[in-house]
Image 1 (cartoon, one colour):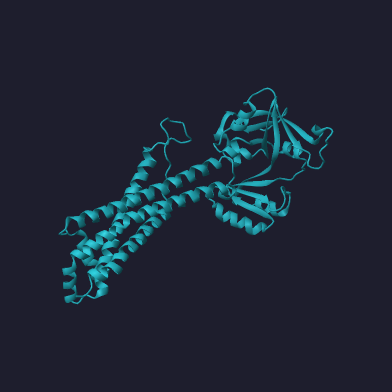
Image 2 (cartoon, one colour):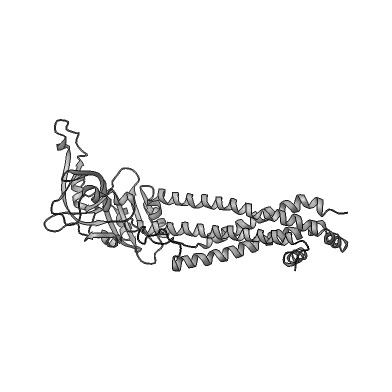
Length: 409
């Protein structure tokens, strides 16, 4: 066994002659444990919310989305797109055409986004699971139908099954505005309300309306153009691998996005919040760990006679410094291990039983308890961070204060 490490271990677990040293050492370990628990739990909760938001967007966003790099639309009837459709990893490819429109119901009107989708859209995403009224239907032999977000439906004062249709106004993109008769500058479409969805994401619930793809093309004056090709992959296929294949196939002509890239602003904001919280907790951890300075300083004073004995039997200055350096590092190391273990236990209990609630009333939020998701990478980073801060906290008293208290007499 390494000689400095052996002596440091004996000093850590042996009883000191001055009880204050024991108390300060215990406080140092407890401070590291509590700060480490906070790091594990905080990062795991942020991961849980990230997974929650991702699951909410999965009801509306496809696994992969292809859009034009230049312009709003592109023609899907070309060799490149057909090659992508025929890839063995692709389960469903759905054409989408969307744009802004004025949506009116009787005396109420709202500016929203019409999203024209084809018949396999319900297979592309799990839209049925977020319908709160009606059933998903886009058209039949008689009429076209629309599926609205709950916020948009509320603003218009409508619900599924209403007898009167919605009026959809879209400016004619290939004509100038007629100032004498502005109404003639709009294409007008009509849709009955078949269902209302709620995704709990404002950008969708308050603005989006699904209509048949052909109706969207008619309103926007397009023949077969689309604004996006949305893809669902087969089970067990890696989205990252397929995304790389598609990018290699289509080059710079199109943009390929996964779910995180489609909602880049939302997920980036969550990541920024996560790492700012991590830095704040690291600062608190550093304050807790610097109790090691006091503990080691008092220990070096107490062990001056032992240091002289070690010199007499041949220990070098470097080895003596390593003893106290290992002492401080073990305090932070044991604190990190116990803190990570306790944090993992708390996260598993929260995941299983949800004892920390989001609110006093059940059902007031999307979920009742704080979500948690422990990532091995976060645990490794926390452990390494604690060790680095602990090493720096131990290095200072050994390097500078030790010159006075363990110097050769």
